[in-house]
Image (tube, rainbow, N blue to C red; front, side, top):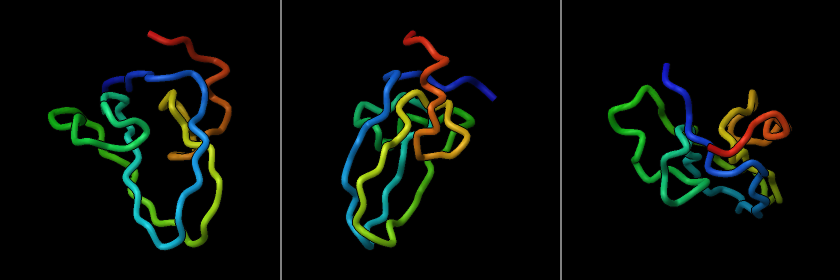
Length: 82
């Protein structure tokens, strides 16, 4: 598996809406971070698709190294921007 690109070394804080389905970019190549725009085509990556059960403010991983995708787990503290 190839390594994900690192678009940022801090999470993106967003309020996501109840009942909405989201596709989080796992490869780091999307021009629409943190959302997938299909840039992973031809790689081993696939987006993490999830639905919000309630409206909530979340911290989405932008370093793409999280162990809890799509949510930030603090992994960005150990990565450097490329």
